[in-house]
Length: 375
Ligand SMILES: [Zn+2]
Image (tube, rainbow, N blue to C red; front, top):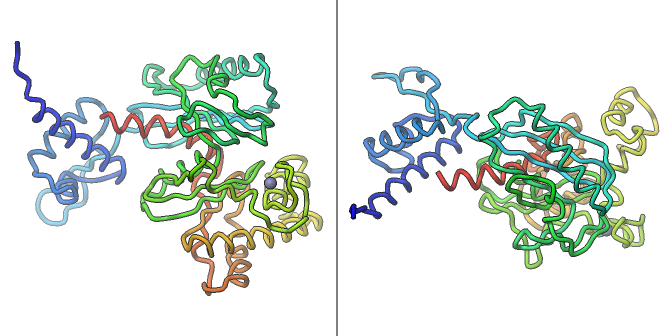
């Protein structure tokens, strides 16, 4: 029987994993930087990158400009090493995205399809997914799996949707959604998924709150590059924080929730159901749309002020509406500053990085993250 030294093997694969995660995190690096930052000897780094090259996980992108001495090779992750698909389920539509190894969206589609809890609906998800995959140009054998984003609370094990007011379901097994999907599936709450996409884009690792302003309002609290879920997986449900006591009815059945004032639907109502049309109308000077946006930003400012008071950290404004707020971010910052007890400016407020289909992207990224751990 051949003798295998497991401790040497484990050490080798641990180093390879460390090096790979470093390269993924940096996006672009050199052998010298890896060696310095990870405190690994140069021969160890070279052995690890040799393996990563042979596995097709990293590639060479030429040479860095010389800082004296020999020019260093530029090491980058191979974006086409693996792929993952994200599916975002909402009450009114289903979105599909294809992302590559570095989280770039390389294909997407959104289909109007109202949710109903019947076998035909779930079969349709499988049919739409197959059509989507067939239209994408990528080596199908490199697909890691499908991540599904759901507007509701998912239990800790990721097996049950315990509550979704948006889809009007309770205690439904997640597997019903993947019954027609012939790939490994995982499930995630929509706002948590969107924040995962944001974590992927911002590798700083500091505490931040992601506010998801989509057809429903949600959010996520990000600590140490992961999501703080709470005792019942219900943290960051900012949509149901009370904004106006006894105010407008919320879809959850209560009155005056933040969601009733700041979901994307509030604006879409004046844009023929589309945010793009709404914001075009604002630019054209449509008085009703301008008035609606003004009220919307005032309400959003109150919610952001309260989040800042509770968490004292950066706030990322995301979701469908967040994708359109770049042009209004200074205005929003000024409104929050006027309400804020401690800050003189609103520099802690940031527009989201993923402007479109962030929830689907985040759902897909789960498979990429899991794969990176196995390298
Ligand atoms: Zn509510």
